[in-house]
Image: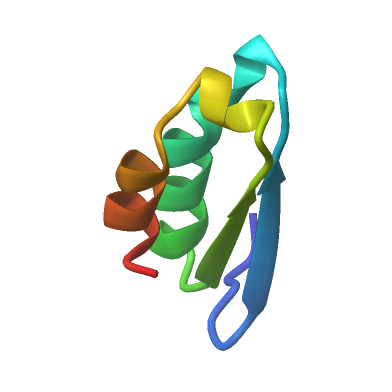
Length: 59
């Protein structure tokens, strides 16, 4: 995968069991140089906490 340096990415996390993978996706994108912001829906909050996404994304 190519470098994502100086790229800004918005990751939407909705009500799916796959929401638990969001912190890993955020970390991988950051490792490639991207700045990641996360939007969490109410449905997504049933599977993962806002605090865990804040800590991972640093936003």
